[in-house]
Image 1 (cartoon, one colour):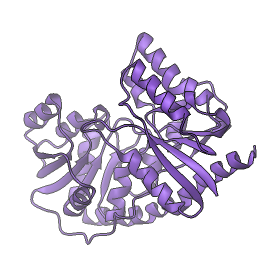
Image 2: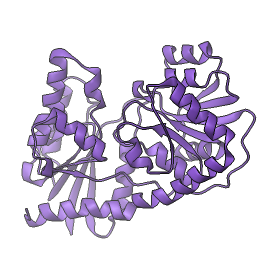
Image 3: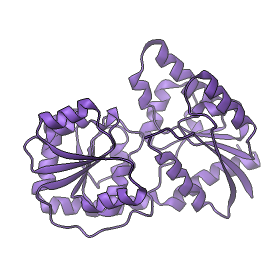
Image 4: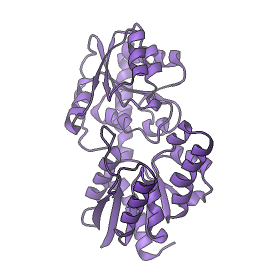
Length: 333
């Protein structure tokens, strides 16, 4: 049985930990086929010395196969190159840096870690394309392995639209496009439930455009699933995403989703979403207007979404990782 060490980051307060959930499900789907060990970095990934401490700790925790699961790419620098898989989820952080800081990020978070592993996985073809714009790497080294849908999300009966229409927005990071979302919803009969804490700019945009909203934080996984059940439309109009799990979560729950026509989102959504231009407020508004006004269109989106999620079966995706682990364990090229 192949022994795998999965390397995870140390938790930060109020941070998103979807990566940990993704690989918890991978391990569950590979139970009985591999022997898994989880190693959490001893230090929060801040500053040079803490990161060097994390690299040193990783060096003494290796197995037959090492898998750095994301966000701490630099851990590969302490691991055996020929036994290591690195998952890079997205490169959006590169768009928020400039000058020497951007080049330092490129080398320390992307180029050097990728040079020091056997395989790289990324979660979408869009993420792979983005990655190749920043690193010098043989494209064949990078394998696209999608994220799986959490089986805890299940179909819930669709109700008539509420008055106001209940809209769910998951996430408040800069790329989530909250300010344009607020502008697009001006004058529409909606109430937006936001998962996450709005910053001052985002809250001001909601107030400026008279959009009724509520912000929810520190939710359990069960509470988040219930928000999907209680909503009418899920919005995920980001300007860039490595993947976009809320798209699949909406589809699995049987809720219509509106998402962007850029980055990874069309790849993930398939035909099961209303696609809009996230940089164009009017395009966003027209998408919401159509979903609210056209019941037949909503039902078509929902049915297409239910068909789409079969592409993201957990066992199928776990087996793609298993194939890479087996190549490393046997020395297969």
